[in-house]
Amino acid sequence: MSISNMKKRRARTLLTILGVIIGTVSIVSMISVGLGFSRSVMTEIAKQGNPTEIKVYDNVRSDKIERKDRKITDKTIQKIEELEGVVNVYPVISLEGELKMGKYETYTEIKGVPMEYLESKGLKDGSYPETSTKPLLLAGQGLSYALYNSRNGVSYNDTMSKGETFTGKKVDFSYFNEPDEETMNENSEKDSSEKGSNKDSSDELSYDDYFINVKLNIVGMTDNEYDYSVYTDIESLKKYVRRNKAGTKIPGQPLDKDGKAINEWIYTGLIVEIEDAADVDRVSKAISNLGFRAENNKEAIKNANKTTTSVKVLLGIVGTIALIVAIIGIVNTMSTAVYDRMQEIGTLKLIGCDSDDILFMFLFESGILGAIGGSIGVGASYMVNQLLIEKKIPAMLELPKGLPVTYMPWWLSVGAILLAIVVSVLAGAFPARYAARLKPLDAATTV
Image 1 (cartoon, helix red, strand yellow):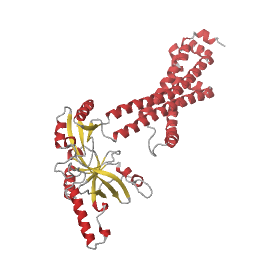
Image 2 (cartoon, rainbow, N blue to C red; image 1 turned 120 degrees about the vertical axis):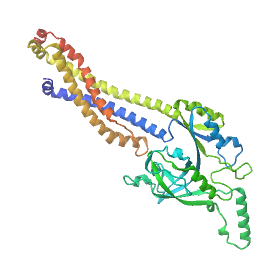
Image 3 (spheres, one colour; image 1 turned 180 degrees about the horizontal axis):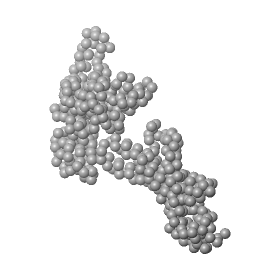
Image 4 (tube, rainbow, N blue to C red; image 1 turned 120 degrees about the horizontal axis):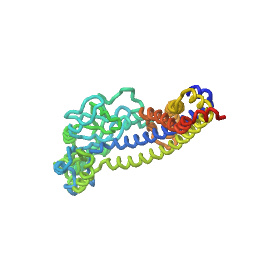
């Protein structure tokens, strides 16, 4: 009987369903935009590391050591390891330079870290770097975005075939092998004497002569698509740069205050793992009190959560307004249906239908309207997101190409349909209750 009555009043039924569709599209699209925004922000933060990691640096990174106690050494590691809540401390040394793979290039750094830390990185394929005379590399998936063709600006990621990885590829790495002052002076004196013996001045040592070019192998790739780093075993990197140094100066290592090389390793930074994220602020403060700079993304996550929550609430309000309009339409439709069918209701009661039967009939009709409108609305939301929001919004706001603006998980689709049904049933509850409470004779004799 509910379906039959809906067919008799097609125009009213279609308009009511249209109201539910509009309400569903509005609230689903707004929520999916909010979820997409939140996901993008959290993804950017995730690139900086997990919330239980603290990255430690010296306050002033200079070529010469003025205060050795403010540089990161093995003694620094021992001090931080003694702090309560610290699980692991991993030293990091970096070798900066230009990395080339065919016609693609990028300026990056090879990070030497202990094997224990390397093994904490998930592998997409390949293997972890082993200790070797020449550093073996572990590449983050994000390196494909960093590598680009300088001639046309196209990134390597745009040309990668499906399933292609970095594992097994060879790269050319070029870095500045900075000599110490004594070696520089010796080379200058040598050049001067050679000039005096009629040697061509074009053979004089230049800045470019202190660059080392080396071909390295990539043996594995991390499973983090937002990891732009290139890693290797720290012991392999130490041995390599020490063996290929110019004079006594080790690349990436500062000099003492007299301009001479030092024997002790000065690390670029440390990665400190904390047992509980709740202790990050306390440990960071303790590290700062030791005279070092401590960075973590816990505060960034906290601020991002506040921002994304505000955006989601605002978008939810906009969607809710449209949903309220749809609810008013359903209430109006069901109320009109009750008044139009007063005699029918009276007749049904006279032949034996009780109040629960009448109530169920109108609630069932409301539920059908909500189910049809909600299902179509979810499908329309997918189309709106893909054809309108994902294509137009990034261009309008000048966002990076390919940045996901919306995120529509399965639970949002299912939840939207269920919400449309529940809201429709609740919207039809008052008219249905009024119809169920009508007295048979009063309803049957109403004109």
